[in-house]
Image (cartoon, rainbow, N blue to C red):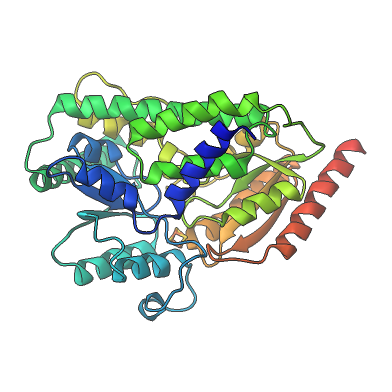
Length: 390
Ligand code: SF4
């Protein structure tokens, strides 16, 4: 690997590994009065935070490298891992650099976490972002606009200056570019997954949690330029798979590496889905708040965290399989993740109707042993290769 590419990936990995949020602290110290707002996974309108002159910071727990000492006392045992490590990070003062925290309404666990935050840190701004599950403009649209207006006013108060329409339009454009660059990378990976392996793409993607969006876009552009220059990256006889269920608690990097080593090229996934929740560009003309509302209502991704009418589940997944010429689907959800696991049977039914092979296993962000997953993914990949040749 060229030193330039190795440095790029290493820099992103260091950002991902840094529980102390050093990059966020440095960003704040570089300008007087700068503030940072954390948010849990899936969608929050980061454009509003950016337009307020603040840094949106994605919080995705602590992976496998933080011992949970106090976090377990806050939650029952039969729930996922991300809230425990997130509260552990907070109680160990590692998240003190954040001036506020948004909790999007993905599940009861996150709702409870937002309540705990309110009690534990009464001096900080905390908001439960109750995303609409009605996508009619007259109901969900009116409601969502009101929520955005409240959030806009709150953030303006926190920053000490109003969020002007022009600033918001600019921030929308900045995030449009970031999303379209991510999508460009995803398309490139789908075409040539051996040039852009998911174990690298993910590391680069995840740096978005702490970098300003402009810097993150530049990072991805650099990767898009450097990766194809690697001369030793060759196609191998691997199965093309779509990974589903990873939109909130993130799998350990070792799991993604294991899938690749077991013979699977991941050609689409829902890792850190909140970064590309809105499909396509948001309008930079007219009323920017209404543009955010319209985009959310009409162009949100289809995932377990949003309402879909009966019979519609699985359509987007089948489309992704077709569009990315995938040969199978791996359901890879965090243990005890209600949204992912409750939707899974409906997705399985949609795949079965189309005759698309699938397999499933669960993980936790602190999973450290991958032998069983490697065996299962390897067998799945082999069986796909055998069937496709039969
Ligand atoms: S991993 Fe699933 S259950 Fe846990 S907080 Fe995220 S969405 Fe909720």
